[in-house]
Every structure is written in structure tokens, then in C-alpha cells.
Image (cartoon, rainbow, N blue to C red; front, side):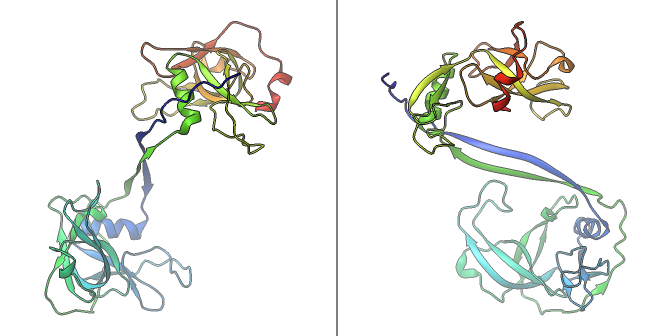
Length: 319
């Protein structure tokens, strides 16, 4: 069998993003609420050091610490690096320095942006101060950045009870990774076949297993795969889970079922949503077929075919 000519290798921008929600203990709550009120708090350890940002446990003794200290809003640059091309979501849109700043009264340094006209204007040991954000919500971004400021160091720190009106109890920290993904020749062929509503795998020349989606090499034998094999379109549910939490930007009502589906002729199960059947009637061995939407680039979901369930021995190796 002569391999089909490989299509142009594809690439596309891809973003992986999720919000991380966490509650705050008394120390972090006081720190973030303090920023909202233009107050910077640290915490004093058993050996007398003041840590900014504060932590909840002593890094030396591992004991819980809650001895809050108000430190200054001016400080000294201990080290820095110039950022000539700020990225989306960074503190400033113009070139700036990332700097470690030891605030007056603190024994550790805080990492933040330093607004300066250029790298020649930044030096270790220079004095800077906080530039507060116009709108503050109780987040590290309440410090918009640092800016150069001539002042004398004031090493004193005043005890603080950490009490504020309407304290911040929790935060949502966004996590996002932007990159360009290239699927390679094997998966480019797979994607091109899906455009014609066909599912193509690749057969290993050694163990003869057919992998879907193909990777260009056999994960067991480690040899290149190039023989194209059409599989499916029907398949068997091997394992599944019931999803009860609605995903953001996903217009699917919960609960729904997400399953591993072994397409006929494939030796590796792929993922797919199961529809056309109540979620509590989905089962291992259920025979399913793809359902395509108009203009869809891949099956929208899989539905029961009405065939008898597959015997366990026919898919037990694909669990």
C-alpha cells in the first residue's frame, strides 16, 4: 500500500487557561486587604526577621506565625533585570525592569515591576517607592509598580493587628499559557481526514497495532509509523465518567458523560462525549457512532448504535 502524500504540516495558536480559586488564612488576608488600604504588611519570624510578602509558617522552624508588622512603602533595589518587550498581562505595557525590592523594615525582597525610562536608569541599591493602582481590590496588582524615589531608608517596622474593615477572604488567580502548537505530519494527516468525516490511524510495522490519533511513532516499539489505516466510524465505550460541573464557555448541560471510545479497528481508545442516551444508562461495552454537526471539524458527540453491547474480552486490553 502506497502511503498517501502528507499534507502541509499545520500550526495554530493555542491557549491553556484556568482560574485557580483559593481561600486566604489570616496572614494572607491581612496582607492583601492591607494593599487595598495602601498598607504593606510583613510577618515577624521567631528569629526576628520580617518577611515581605508574609508567609504563614516560619521557614526555619515550620511553626505558624501571625506577628504582623507594617513596613514602609519605599525600599531599595537588591537586583533587577530589564524587560524590553512586555507581554500581555504584565504590570506595564512599556519596557520596564523586574526588580527585587527590600522595603524599609523588611528583611526579604518583594518582586515587582519598576517603571524606569531605560536600563541605564536602573541600578542595584537605588531607592524606589510604591506606585499605587488607582483602583484597588485586595490583590498584588494594587501595587501598580515601583518608581524611582530619593529617600533615606527607615528600618523601623510598626506592629499591626491585621484588622481591616471588609477583609479579603479569597482570591481567584488566573493561569494562562499561550503557545503555538504544531501537530506534526502524522496528526496533520489525521486532522485533514477528519475534515472529510473519516478517522485515520497509523499502523506500527512491528507490533501491527493501529494508533488513533497517530503520533508518528509507536509508543511501544519506538519505531516510525507511516501506514495509514481508516478506523471506525463505530466504536465501543471502554470506560467513562459523569461530568457534573459545567465548564466555562462550554454550552453543554450537566450532567453529561465523557468516555474512552475504542473505534473499530483501533488499538487505542480516544476521548468523546456520549449523547442521545440518559447519562445513567451509559455503560462499558456500549456500541456508539459519531454525530457530526454542519461544518464541524470533528464529531460533536457519539450516540448509541442500537447494536448489542460488545463482549468485555473484545475491549479489555483497551481500558
